[in-house]
Length: 150
Image (cartoon, rainbow, N blue to C red):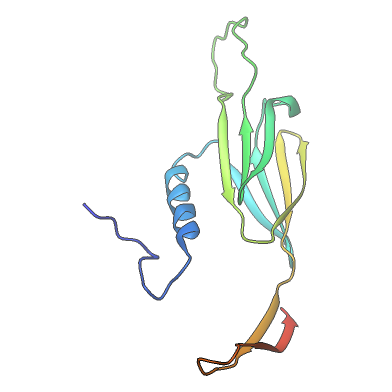
């Protein structure tokens, strides 16, 4: 059975990477642990906050893998404890966020059981280019008509 693809069009060239990102997101979207927020802090800053109660700084990793922000956690085993009731989840987790081109991770802070990861998206330059139409024996050239920031 063939799969319908959002990017399966002859008019959309070079979008294979986006298709892979959509596939990855759909596979991990069903796992709700740990819960998280994504907040727009300012015009070009974003904060991801994960609820990681019971995890220490040493129990977690924040990494950039290709174009993904990957946050992993694995709590130390406490097999020596005898619980009468255990309602606080301390299972390992892996949470991945696909990052757009140019987004930078500024820092990560653990505070009161919450892990805050701050990101910055630089303002984009919008360039309009004119491509000169050549005959078969001329060398092509390009000219930048307008370059502005949005």
